[in-house]
Image (cartoon, rainbow, N blue to C red):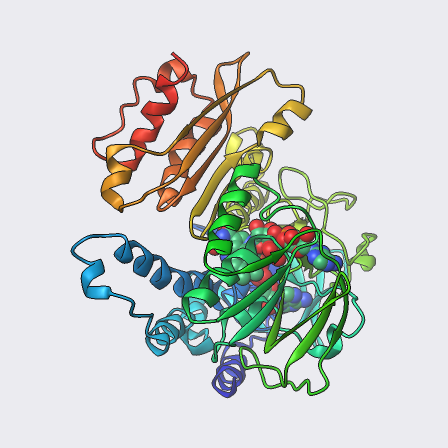
Length: 493
Ligand SMILES: Cc1cc2nc3c(=O)[nH]c(=O)nc-3n(C[C@H](O)[C@H](O)[C@H](O)COP(=O)(O)OP(=O)(O)OC[C@H]3O[C@@H](n4cnc5c(N)ncnc54)[C@H](O)[C@@H]3O)c2cc1C
Ligand SMILES: NC(=O)c1ccc[n+]([C@@H]2O[C@H](COP(=O)([O-])OP(=O)(O)OC[C@H]3O[C@@H](n4cnc5c(N)ncnc54)[C@H](O)[C@@H]3O)[C@@H](O)[C@H]2O)c1
């Protein structure tokens, strides 16, 4: 943390500029803000500034995607090795080298030093201004005692923060949130996890692989990963339960008690044992992880100065322009607009928004499809890096039926030469949701080891609206897991 603050102070002094006007001002220097700024000025003499309160690179680089995936991959490699004759005999029952895993995680988060990202921004012609940015009127932003105006656009890219439910005693217990779980320095022996969504399932996966012995998940709903096809959450729940995780479904957290709560810093255990009451039962652990969703960072952005309510997701149109603000100058991209809380989708919006700003700055028409974030509507891909992995794109069966689509379901277990070669005891399942009227795929879900790499083919089919008749000629290579595509198509002949 000291190193992180030193890096911030140092860069703060070095990158402060005295300009009072830019063509484009972006508040929030996460992956999405970076893309919006660079696309808005690329190949032009337009000027841009990113205002960043913490680290350039945002939640994704230091506290979310990168550290979490760096923690998850070693466990996945070990699991594959344990299912591979010739390798499993060497691995035996050895566990991960926790220190080496954490060191690799640190190499991805650069010890919370964002110098390389600042160098990238400056190299792209973007000034980095340190501090908390706020709108103070049309095209006007304040950072501390400095006021800056934007000739063309202000882009809000402030992301989200972890949401902590108001359960009695929970906030006082100083629970871990995703920032602690991804930046853990010590692996707690016993953990209670609140939530059954993506952060909860992925966190439990790496905690298990790093040696947490006792995990209790407190899940409000009846399933894990409830935003997916039901079979995905069922497969992940079974796998976690087989590894000893206790999952309390339909559970409500009634109270939390931690007499010795201490703020020891991100990723350190926050004091003594914590006891929760769930449906009348007491459970005690060394740490409690809250993974109960996110809140948009829009509450302290000065939105009221331009007539927009703060504190909620900022509503935008498909050009990423904020609804209800005149003059085509205010945009909101990434997590803060609530459209899709995913880095790749936010960066896509950043590209669209940057292109829109550039086009409007040069009086171009916005007729082309690249000026519209159409994929936000029912064409979003996501990979959940649990064991088994879950990858999906588009809409699910229930959603499709609710929308009145004439649905055909095509599904199959993943049992092809490529999957059996990948590891012994491979189990997986795939499901396509087909719109019978157009003979195109509107949704696809894959569950199993290594299915992350299957989803882009499905994304192309969904976005390209490729008829299944044409997909018959997209022949998967032998022997790969992609042969599941052939099985799926064969099953409807
Ligand atoms: C544990 C975890 C794992 C995840 N894993 C994945 C994954 O594997 N794949 C994936 O696609 N998505 C993942 N996500 C989601 C992903 O992190 C977000 O979708 C992504 O970070 C959104 O990018 P953003 O730029 O919109 O916001 P952020 O990354 O949150 O960046 C916003 C930036 O704005 C700054 N800021 C906020 N307010 C102000 C202000 N007023 N002034 C100045 N600066 C401000 C913040 O300091 C921050 O740097 C994960 C999320 C979590 C919590
Ligand atoms: N691999 C990835 O792509 C990845 C990884 C992590 C996070 N993310 C993104 O980050 C976002 C946030 O993830 P998340 O898991 O925090 O949110 P989520 O919305 O996926 O899950 C939140 C969970 O918390 C529960 N919950 C909400 N309020 C509660 C309350 N008051 N009490 C008890 N339980 C409560 C919900 O029922 C749900 O199970 C997601 O949209 C996800 O897409 C993506």
